[in-house]
Length: 535
Image 1 (tube, helix red, strand yellow):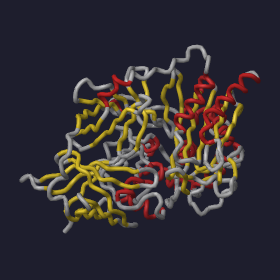
Image 2 (cartoon, rainbow, N blue to C red; image 1 turned 90 degrees about the vertical axis):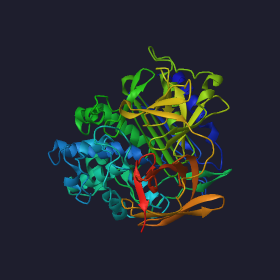
Image 3 (spheres, one colour; image 1 turned 30 degrees about the vertical axis):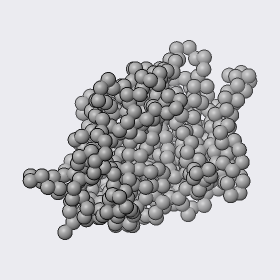
Image 4 (cartoon, rainbow, N blue to C red; image 1 turned 180 degrees about the vertical axis):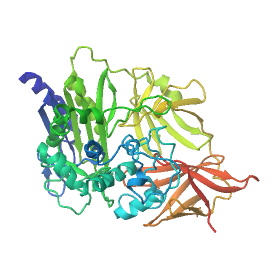
């Protein structure tokens, strides 16, 4: 790379950061690794709005789920030493879990193919959001109460923080030492990653740690989080240290060549389709190149770690602004670094806006009551929304529209009638139809309902012009949560949260006589939670 190439790349990076390059705004830092060298690091925005401290090369951030590959690396190192087997049943290692009626292996948890329900969503459904204090024991107890799975292990992919929290505990059990000590001694210290550490609690003092912020109208508020973090997302790090880790994946200083191969080895589901999620890294293709990547999301922090090893290029983006789309920034930085590379596939263009109009509206999967909202933005970008999490759709090389969102298999074609087919994990295809207009929640929904797996009670009562839910769980209470009709027995419950205004989909369960006997609730990472009438 010539000096002029680097100058042009820096200017491209500055343009990407321009929206946050102003006083009074949190921002982001970008890093680009090329052929083993950190050739670029540019930053914009402030690490502390209160103190007016700018983000710079020495700023650290919570990298959230980018931590997962390090937890997997620790598991793999211990397995190579014979301290555990990747085929061990999780219950043999964590007896606090209830019998699930089937084996869940360590390897399935590393691949997000375990079927374990996500603990963060379980806590939210029981009335405890990320901003509320919780203890490791309370989170483990929530996971331990589960008697069912989202699906049979090894058959599907669904992101589960529960699996990685348990993996962190298994590291500690097998190594006979705390997770932070294992990661420091086995990975960080040997590599010189001196500004990376496992930091589970908000109260811990971390030098030069950026404060996380969330947009609030025209300004910002400090992001609140009270949950302890384990193997699922407890690391604090920076661009320089993640560049060092990227170099280790290429050189094998820690772990040898086999470690990178093991972290990025894809495995088939039971139907033979390959899982895009390897072990703490998603392995897929972008513009004809193999990529290995992972994102991180925590209140006020977002991270994108994006490798294109065949091109010798890695893009790293970390933000302390909860509204920045680091996934898109990382790919735009990668585009800039790959510009002019022979054989690079062009970015497919979106169809013209009028041809996308049939996508707009609310779509319903009648069997479970799952809903999908799609709207077409003014610039012609289709925006999808599931459970309150909006994401853009981008044109794919296969002619379909794909989610522009990290680690989220989702592809659809523009419908020609009232049926919308969406392909997700393991090649599964879900058939949606247009939802009806108006209606009312199922008759008889008012009352008190109990979910034993959540140890929570939902009380549904009239509120304003409709119904609302008051939630009482084992840790805290929440509400009112508004109930909105969708169609027939299908309804939606709004679930306010620190990260976004979410919702869960629900469908009435009826007895043989057709009477309302309960309802099943489905969220983004929790499926089919059953509530029955209390008393």
